[in-house]
Image (tube, rainbow, N blue to C red; front, side, top):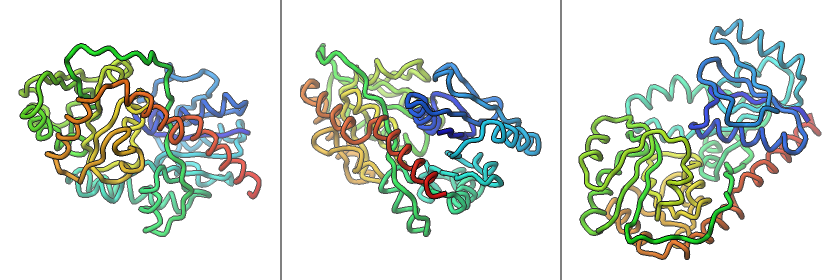
Length: 347
């Protein structure tokens, strides 16, 4: 089978890009041929197999369309699969088109004025693209229900992550470590300073590592002024931070199927999150973390303290098995291959 993907950028620090590449690599491993079409500029190709052909589309629409047309004519894919609005370039071609929705819209409209404007610029066009697709795909049950409310009938395939081979021996040095991964902004980090204050009120010998871009000055300054907090910015690999952490703090206000939540558990790290969107699907409360009432920062802090008090070795295997059974990279790839084959058979 030949499959051509589209994603507007191709970088390892973006979750949508990671999902696109993981599916593509899985297809290559199964003997299929794959290409990815992306925009010129924000593109890196040194983080995935060279067996994936990458086509960079110029920003100018007419020239970009010609390059895509020429590639599709030569490559002759049986399936087109887009992960964002670059997929509009696929619509003129008589090739089955799968569109995966990674969006949390319309919930994201209400996070800020910027998010509201993005709803008109990005999300409404994406909604139209999902309706035009041969088959839309939702990445969680929450996402599926949101799409069905808008009379879109998607298949559902969860995002998947790799479960690494780890040394199961956990070393305890007396200091407990919490981790936050994501943009420090109104969507993911609004409640983080408040949660950390409540943790500090009740806990001792606890440190917080923050990985991600400080997108909001006010939030970032509050956290920088707090005790026992260390900003690391962008890092080459999250692995050592996941392995070190006793729990991941994930106080996001809008998600579809966040890779960070899955990745932390894949490394044996329990996750605390608000009970919104898909979080209660992805976290097995009481076993691989806790899902607490939305925006109850006191309960959030209490659960974080509860998890850091546990013996890490007790939760490590449970978290990792939860991901292997439900959200593994292999599960995701197999489900997409089944979807492609079904579409090709009936098209």
